Image (tube, rainbow over all chains, first blue to last red; front, side, top):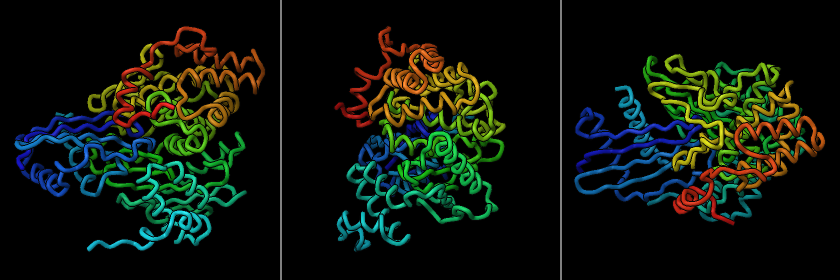
Length: 105
Length: 382
């Protein structure tokens, strides 16, 4: 799997603030790129259902949308907090940090 | 080979319900976590909430708080760290959750004669230290959950403090529970924005009640103290002047409208529930300031009765305007200053309370609603 790009968006939450980032994989430090690639692999991301949310009616939870573009495939997944597995939570945390970092630059 | 807890596999739901309502504490928790999984799979969140309420209720009991610590993990509820009547903890977040849920209980009980979230003594469960770098708080259908902000970032880059730091955040989350047991407003589009607004209204009222402020003295800011000094902002939302709470290079600008003409059509945030709530928020603010004195006494009473008795799952802004007007008439008399204040509140945000005037296209119907319904983010039409 050769990841080219990840589009990440987080909406909702108590504050209702939107965070989004368009991450070019070749621009990421190797360590972060490796972490993300490993998490995507562990999650078998391409095979996940597009809609993971079973908690869209839970007040104030975040809604996350992740689009992964590789040389072989593209896949978009939407998830919430409660429906995210441990691995998915790790991925969301990494992407959220990168999105904030990108906004600072 | 997969391992299953036998209770997950073989015990029929009606027996689990019995355990959940009559068993020991440990049995209750196990039965409820099992019911939780099956109710989520079946999309029966309200049924789940009713079980939880039944299990954790002692009829006729008063305030009963339990605070848990998730220890930065995501497993809920976590470890019990403080129960009702126990002395203060060394952990400030624990005490804030305890005290905040306590005074929220007090406002609903003392002013509106409501005994807890379900009106029948439901235990108030709160979990602090949820996950790492979790800049949020939420109501999960059974309990309140609080993150520590972005404590995982370098100090100079942190934007949020812990979410228990603001009393109105705690009252906001608890009020989501009240709404779940009363109007059951669907968490999408206008019903969702009304759900959010009710939480902001009673969130702000609890803070004013604690500080014993009049409507004129209150700041009407939601989440004051939540943003760090690194952010250019006074809080998360302003009921007095929606759209002005923050304007920051990293967080952007507060997107809330204060008038129907500026209603925001969006798919994100469940159709803008935290954005368009600015409109009913401002209507409440105008009503409360028009009446003067303590906002929880008259304006709060009108909004509470409307939430409890008049609104339903699919209620929109116009219905809320009409119903608050009707309730003001029932409580204080037709043509009373209270009813006139409600009328003025809604008029300032572009809504005529009798519904006879022009109502702007709000995006609550038509293409956007159809699209959201298609992707499962809006309620099915009855």
